[in-house]
Image (cartoon, rainbow, N blue to C red):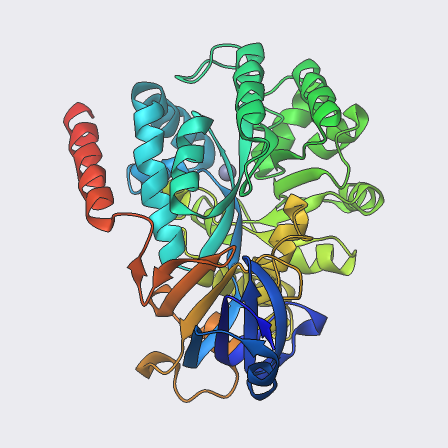
Length: 439
Ligand SMILES: [Zn+2]
């Protein structure tokens, strides 16, 4: 019998692999933070030896959610300005508040608040775009989650940097500091085509190629963005990115709400990664991303919440539900985006978008043991005919009971093991008082 670290005996197990069959009474066998095996529990106990067999008799075990688009430090702006159109929201509220408040300390406190919220809702990895990257990385390092942290670049000054060269210089320093970290990846993150000029996008492309980094950008989020681009250059943003050579499978295109036939032809030929943020798009009335059209073209579509200031939470369970309902509503087809495929979108597709699907995103031999348990024997999720339906259509994030990353447990029966919940709450209230006083 081979000695292993632990064994999770799961009533149900969703792997996000193999067209997603739900396994019953299977064990997840873990050794050195890696999934050693997945097999019927009865068989596992005859092959592997461990003192740590944990029974999850009323739970479904599944890969941790991958929130593929966030601005986690915006958690401290949650509820600060709501019910506004994107450009008014940014110009009159968010950007001035960011200029006034954002600092290393702000981003660190906000990141811990956001990561605590993410762990409590089953997210084990996120893809971020913000400023003061070291502050976010410090919080990630302590919390034990995974993150892909974007080197944000924008043509106007912020508290983080004054010029595009300063953004990139600071970003590359960050990359050098963290490139060997086991759980932290770096991307380049030009904010959008309307805030980063084309020569600067070319500069960013060169850096990305030299360092083999993915590029993350908000794209075709609103009709205004496209109209502005047409007025200035007679070309749509997608076409302009293609001309620069940025539209490749290494581009993470966030939002992609508005597309025409010409855009779809370009996307089909260039195959960027697409990130769907349904709740942010609905709240800002940006529109509905044509997820089913993209899937029919064979494009990878991942799921993100966007920042908590435009959502207003980092809850991947409600995000799945929104994505699912919106796909059905916009196609007038109740069979669009089945529950189990929605879970794949929130897990494996996120890992593919970030280029880390060799390591995480699904439960299979050899991948990192990044997984969660959702307790389903609650009033809200009984009776139980199909665990995937129950997760997507009925469960709440409060039913996420346990979370592990690389085999290390980060939450046990709703208790955070790596972060101090009371301290994080106290800091959030401190910031709330400061922001209220000045505004
Ligand atoms: Zn965003």
